[in-house]
Structures are given as C-alpha cells and as structure tokens.
Picture 1 (spheres, rainbow, N blue to C red):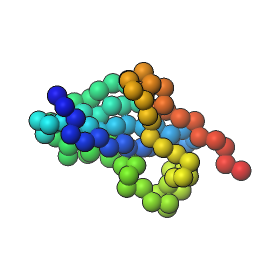
Picture 2: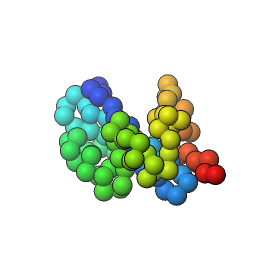
Picture 3: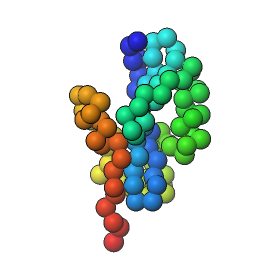
Length: 101
C-alpha cells in the first residue's frame, strides 16, 4: 500500500523526546510508526490522529515557539528522524534532550 502523505508527531517525557510518524495510505487508512519501530494500523487518518493525541503527541509541523517551549525543545535545533530504512529511523525515534542551563 502506497503512502500518500507522512506527518511527524512528537511528545516530551521529561528530558526525552519521542517521535511517531503518521502515514496516510492510498486506501484512506493510516498507520503510525511508533518509537519502537512498530507499524500500528488504523482505519482512518482521524482515528490515528486521535490515538496520537490521546498519547499526548503533537503534530511537529504545527508547533510554534510557545508549544516547543512547553515540550522543552528549541525548534531551530530539532528535526524529525531521517533515514533510508526502518533501522535508521528507529535509532532516532527516542532522543535524550540536553540539559538546560
């Protein structure tokens, strides 16, 4: 099944940043790549979004500076995971944030 669109989501647990990727599939279904590298299926984009929101994730592309400050991140210095395969992504899905001075 081909991916129509992907969107990165982020959550903060103390000094740890956790990523998830929501993929909208051509059939109108969705899947979420979680921080453990598992692919979780959903019947729609709305249900996938609801699950991410319930888990206190936020859409990364919708964050402003105030949102980022609440998460304890600097938007200019954080970017979603990048990689050619699942293993490369998995290694970047959970990040320890530097201590704030």
